[in-house]
Amino acid sequence: MNEACYITIPANKLREAVQIAYEMSAPQGLGFLHARGGPLDDETTDEILARGDDRIAASMDYVHGRSCKFHVYKSADQMLVRPSWYDHSEDALIELLTRLGVTDPQAKIDAAKAAQVAENEKWDRENP
Image (tube, rainbow, N blue to C red; front, side, top):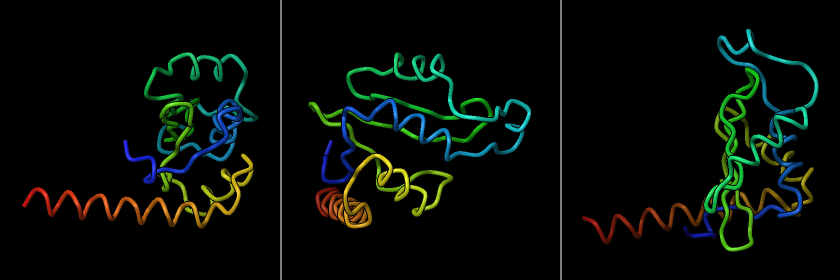
């Protein structure tokens, strides 16, 4: 994993990241049938975190009908997120990162995206 292609979030805020991602996500499609109002309950948060492994700290697809599509990756002692958030705007990602205390989130998003482009170009050169 090339860490430059990701944004580091504070490791001590993993639980908060999961709860914020849920809060900022909306039901989609038939998700409205299972949607719940309010914040993510502690039991569900614990279940999401318990499913983490040595590579993925938290993975959220649809949670209580909401399209969260949020993943936090582990690398050594760091928690990393992608510089784009599926089904969410860049402004939403900036808000999430800001609420987690990440400084200058736009610059970090831009740097991670540039690193991804460089990785892809390198792969293209090495694999014609």
